Image (cartoon, rainbow, N blue to C red; front, side, top):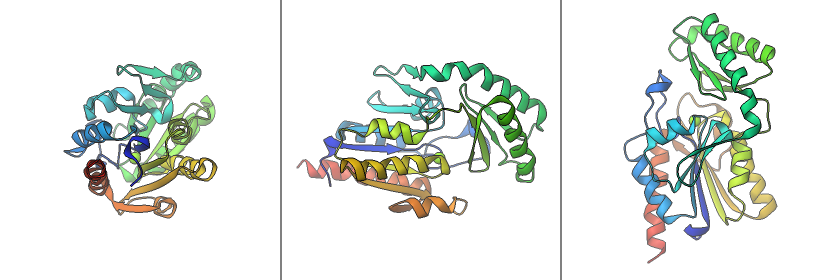
Amino acid sequence: MADPSSTAILTDFDGTLAPIITDPAAVRPLPGIGPTLNRLASQFGLVAVVSGRPVAFLSERLAVVDEVALVGLYGFERSGARGEVIVEPEAEKWRSVVEHAARRLKQELPADVTVESKGLTVAVHWRSVPAMAGIAAAAAERVAASTGLKAHPGRMNLELRPPMDIDKGSAVGALVPGYSAACFVGDDLGDLPAFAALDRASAAEGIFTVTIAAVDDESPPEMEAAADVVVSGPQGALDVLRWLADHAADSRR
Ligand SMILES: [Mg+2]
């Protein structure tokens, strides 16, 4: 494998390190994920979780060392060197707009559609009521149109984010320069820009890159089509990360 100290290990959280369940607030990583990320962080040049969740949520659920970088809200937030949360300054002016959008969605939608308010983004989830998919998505699209927020589709959800050129692609594009190899593990449409950013880094900078899709029966077909490697859900992702941790140690002997 490439020299671990010049390799970046990047991964999504939901659906990749943590099984997707009906209540997004109750999601937890697979047992073993936190210790594995900590092991990787002691071996590799960079280990980062790049997620749509707030940094505070990732920090609480993963309980990893500060050396594991946390990029939250698709790049609108990131953890600092001492675990503090750094927010993209230009995005701040959208916070009140997002709060207003979240209030409207909670008022308009039935209570069993989950409106997940995340500060600078808000997601509408219909996993507990799939029959409401059309109504929930239409309400989110309507609120997006009237607030100027941009709607992004996901697995049984739609998320409204500030209309800025910030996504997992820009986040990954900012993380990988200077490394000679990088991988990204993801499961959903929001991870495709991260895959594309690695493809660009490979073409433009000669970085050796591997894109890994963690898929299950529900995964969007685009993931498998775009990835270099396909594994089975979060357990498959954990197996890959453990393999990397085990073999980084081997390569130093
Ligand atoms: Mg995901």
